[in-house]
Image 1 (cartoon, rainbow, N blue to C red):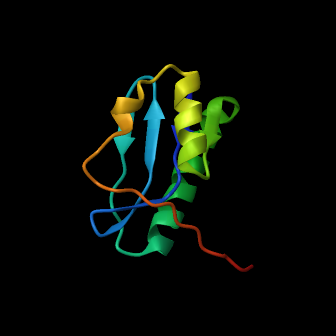
Image 2: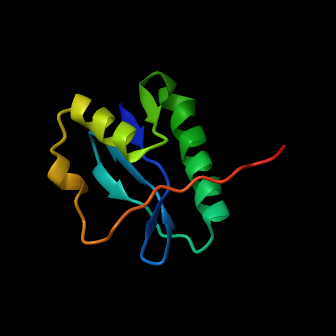
Length: 95
């Protein structure tokens, strides 16, 4: 199974990430209030997908990477359009 996990974006007053699989299509993630919670959930999703499907999983850091990865699977870009404006966010995580 192929999985593409998108970057963390602002959505509905919170932070969320999207993912795509051939079986489920585009899944819009839950909007967390804190960006740290969204990062934790995204990392957990990546770890859970890597266990069984590591060879076919792509974790994208930017929307450009996400849309390019989806284009490789011939997913129409209108599937990504929503009424919400998305902005990528990153945080520095110290050891």
